[in-house]
Length: 163
Length: 163
DNA sequence: TGCTGATTAATAACATGATATATAACAATG
DNA sequence: CATTGTTATATATCATGTTATTAATCAGCA
Image (tube, rainbow over all chains, first blue to last red; front, top):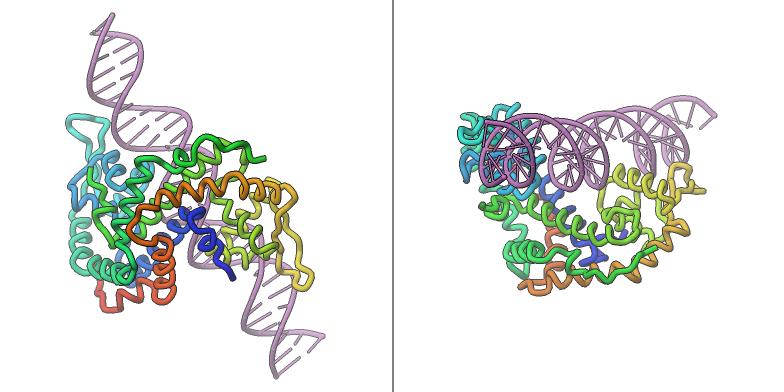
């Protein structure tokens, strides 16, 4: 059976990247499922962001993760229910809600950094090791290219009605 | 503000691919929004599959698109309500429901193939033109690598409990 | 000082992926 | 040929992204 997304090449690059990303995430999830970890793989970037950058308000967290703010609000709520992060009001600005790791969250991140993340990183790096180009650099170039001029701008305005 | 997903490299490759894919899709959506097209960009792969492969039962359509069957069932229902595809019972096997393009669906695909898809493809190809490696080949290699041995298998079994 | 506009986060509603399960039809076997 | 297992699809539920909107707070200015 022909893989249509693959056959369509650049036309469906978005769908294809998304599909590969979901595949990688669910594979990674299976790694975590073997452990006693109560967190979906997709929540780790948020924890990693707090680990790297320290406590952050919701909006900046969204920016750091490159997702929209409501997504962060939802994840934070979930992780707070699990006792991994906590939210405190900012002193200067009552609108801002500062998210930080709890003691348990800290412990989870430290353990993951020590025991799990290096293995996952190595597995993914191996997967990409034989590629003919520097994938991460290329992805960065794509991201920069999109940021500079999104596809719809590149397509131009001269497309007439379709039906 | 540091882009954490980007900084984490291979560890978050899945999240990153997904994020780039979603960005590309929503950019493409904006192209379509300028036209009179009543279809989300994410539905085009299904229409393209029917165009390339002819009428297909739900399961084979899922396989051709590389997504799970319930996703196809849902999209087909949506596209059928829009009058772009229709469903007929298979003769040999009453379980199978064969999805095909309607006259309107055919017309939409033909118009898109003629007027829109080449432009989008070109825009995305341009975006990727300056990359230092053959991106599509690399993605194919990643997909093949995942299929051969998913990440969780590559990580190995020797990871202890995390907390 | 009090109004106006901007900013922050929450909520609602939707899109679209997944898995798990139910139902209907087929196939195979005792 | 009836039962049993398999296969194809639909449905339910969840995860997680989006945009649009609302509510609360801040900041600036007449």
